[in-house]
Length: 370
Ligand SMILES: O=C(O)C(=O)C[C@]1(C(=O)O)C=C[C@@H](O)C=C1
Image (cartoon, rainbow, N blue to C red; front, side):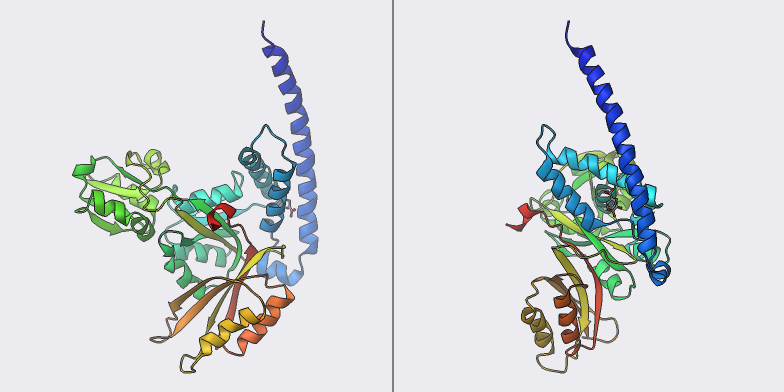
């Protein structure tokens, strides 16, 4: 006779202990929720509400879990378990919702789910500006927007909406993106391919090599592409594999991204940024008087003078007049750090206007740095 019954009895007893400990943790989380409400100033309550989701604290917790973990559970499994523990903890403190570019099955949806878990509400939006609007109008607590892709670059729609928004960046999150060709037709019968411009951009070499004659049609999201492809003969979508089940399509070819380690970086937006950690990034926009020679250079030199590392620079048309640009700069530090505050003050001397879009804990996976 095996030890199975005795081992299961052991598991039952451990589960009992786990349930009690999880509820003990949940009670502390409720107390933390009450403490946060007490600590939130009246004026902030009106402007930003109580900020339940704390990406800085979660980063610290995940780091500690890794250092405590003696196995046999691997770090990914342990983190996934704690993702759900903290998701439930967030939901105990407040009803939290997050707007994302829908319909269900987009990479934004997956990225949000990986960061916030099962206990918060996911609210699909038709386009990226609706995500900004949902947060601005207080219809959802948070929103998630794609920021840049390691193969195809910045998501310009997102940058353009940031120019006009009052929302703040609260967190970042990275998702490895595997694009698939889904269709109910065979490869040689596909005449059109739907996707988001990013999906088409990340797979352009594969599409040119395998279905060069298929018409490429941009739609608002990869999951919308799957929805459309499911309704037409000879149509395909470039999207996530999970859309096959969601929209009743076959996987014609998986992993068609042109570059391995294809990764998209998303920003979680909300009414306010989180408190400083030891390793934050800050996203800023500014405009300069382009008639003044060296104005942009003077502005950028401020970051060097204050020893703030620059990670990313973008420029977008300002939308106010031709050949006038808004510059996006992502630098090290947090907007509450003295060095960043002083640098921003100095930067204002060289700029027509400076806007801080927010600060957030650095979450870049170390492996992708190389
Ligand atoms: O430390 C907090 O601020 C909490 O609300 C607790 C807790 C947790 O369960 O550990 C929950 C949500 C936050 O995103 C971070 C941590």
